[in-house]
Length: 210
Image 1: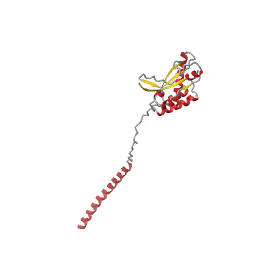
Image 2: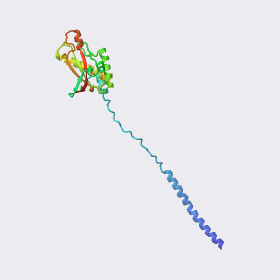
Image 3: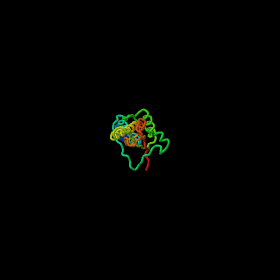
Image 4: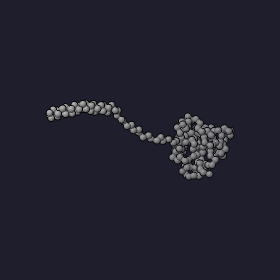
């Protein structure tokens, strides 16, 4: 009887275990399938955004637009001569300035830049590009021949020609003022070819504080 009792107890335990095992296995399989279905989480790290740096114009140097206008011979706005400043001859500042900012000369009734004038302007331009705080006044002059009104216009054209040349070299137009004195301020008061050749000129004055 005891043997039968143990036999039935064993059968009962086995049947219970047999019923739960498939359920456990099924649950484990389902969990694995769910894990397989889950998409991989990819972390997207945004690259550090560099702050935008505003490009400042290179102070003292001509802009691309200014250079293009100067090459084409187009008009470039002329700043008004500041009343709180004064302009002096280069030799009043230093001997070096006098050697650089020399007068340039023109042919009769012309405002084209001659080769000798171009050499002087190159030295002036190079100096101004190295010394960005320098500002100048370009004075246009003529000889006595021609009417006063005509010579005032011609003197202005001569000053503008020199200014344009320096802008093409890269000097900012804002650093250069122009004025025409026509025939009013001759370098040589005589009335002959030698004097007239000296009077057809541009002079350069340097801006200083009053």
